[in-house]
Image 1 (spheres, rainbow, N blue to C red):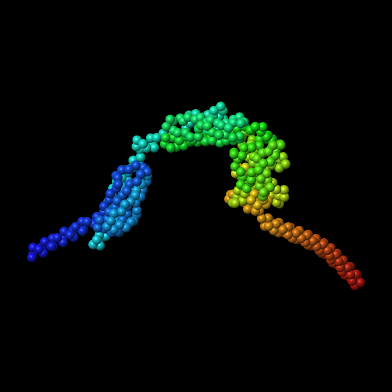
Image 2 (image 1 turned 60 degrees about the horizontal axis):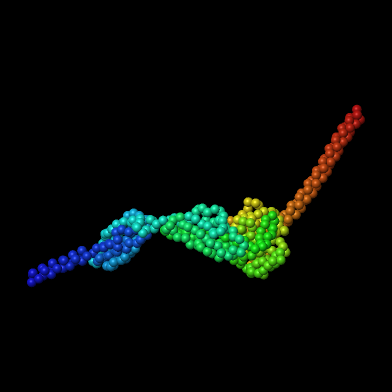
Length: 434
């Protein structure tokens, strides 16, 4: 019986020790090395433990991820760490507030080191060519302007009237690079824009832009100021302005495309200068006025000149989106200016106050200015009245002073005569006594 009890006692001790020995932290990683941009999975086991654990990287700039405090209870949790740069980082799991099955406080930690390489391999993009330059670029039976160089990205070509096809040729500087946008393309009268895109072996891209201008048959030439223009008749190269509808009008006996707006009542045509620049112009009985509109906090404005300039303001110009626009300022250095123009959406014309710093526009309210001017005029009247009163008082004082001076003089003369008479009387009295 004693022998059985002894064996049971020994067995209990071993069971208790087994439970104590079973309380531990487990840490493993899916790999001890990785490359930049890839991820590593870290597994944390709480064997016979429950509580908060932190799982952190010693160098987040190399490997980032983990948690500063996570509850794990007799289980295993996985955490994802991402390789950011080449180097070495240590992943550590630390018991923060942890107890074993018996309720005893558990402290401890475990670490594992991860090596991060630069991501190079036989097929990595680091070894792939980044060369995305063209070696040649040309248009069949045409001349590029300017002459091709691999660093120049924009070109123009002029083709004869009636041309409907163009053939774009290009070769890459690097044989491993690819090119798109070459071969035969359709062209129309006017401007035609094309892109030749070069993609390097590594995936880097470079775009070369070509504007192919096909001459017009019998172009309609006009003059605005001292500058020559031609009327653009190829609508494919034109993006209509919002609110304007396409129509046709007659200029110099020929029908040309135009745009009309029922609200503004304007008719717009597109003119092209000798450099190939296209702009909308208002056409009105043979006259052409450059049309530019600007959008401010939902107001679409067409600036115009104003005849009745507000008092104190002077005519000047300001820049709106690189354009010079007529405006009116109290001071040339002010951030505020008045702009007169039409709201394209309503057709109404107003004076607007433009805030250069905020880039905002609102209808100019001259009510305050009028009140201020009236107050100034009232003060002017009051000052004039006070000035007149002051002058009158000054004159009265002068008159009174003159009268006082005359009175004082008379008094002095009277006193002098009295003294003389008194003296004579005394002398007469003396003579009588003698």
